Image 1 (spheres, rainbow, N blue to C red):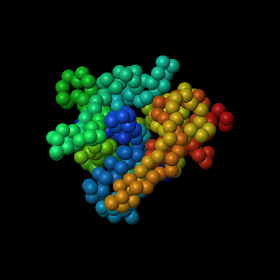
Image 2 (image 1 turned 135 degrees about the vertical axis):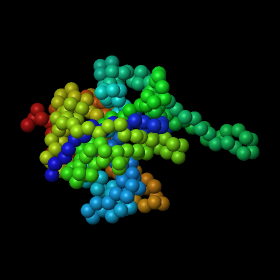
Image 3 (image 1 turned 30 degrees about the horizontal axis):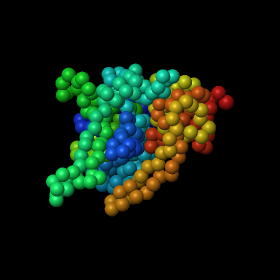
Length: 298
């Protein structure tokens, strides 16, 4: 039971909105692409593309989604420039994204879209309908031409069966070359197109263990978290936040089921003790049941 690690880069062809929270009339976006969103997009694309496998019938969303959970593990994906991944990191003077301050990152990569409903009686904006959607722009500020797209880079672990189907750039491109992720897709948001898939031996420089039921990543003191990690028993500097998700079990009840809410250290938090974490199918690190322990206590 082995996993193979790949570094994966997509270019953003349209604005990307990953729902976060509202501030007044503004619907904020996360600055990264969570693994959960990518899992949903991959499941949708494989199903629509006619994928089938052992005990996985063609066109069955639930069984194909479970196959992806069992055979693929995605990291979070972050904006990248060249070979640099602009993942968040808390420093003594504030939050950075790669070498960019938070303000510099926002000026370079964020934009917003304002819409409102029209009152037919007055032909003016309907009261209470004005809203603004923040998004990651498909073109960085200062781009010299329209072919210079914003890129998103992350990592994917593939188990043996998935590696046989998706484990080369040509195969991945055939199945998952184009994806649609995030919100506001009725406006054309969230279009991704693959740029590259390459084998890798570390996850952004961090050691990994791949001969386990789930991949394990090793963090040392002062390493930065690139995904949520369960906060209980983990020592870090940064931000903690509750995380809860929505699941759809039938077509007429979109997002009806809620996942159990848990408290996590947010991406960008800096560890003050070494840990090893099991990467779950939703992209966060599970620290329960001994999956994640302080190495300096071993």
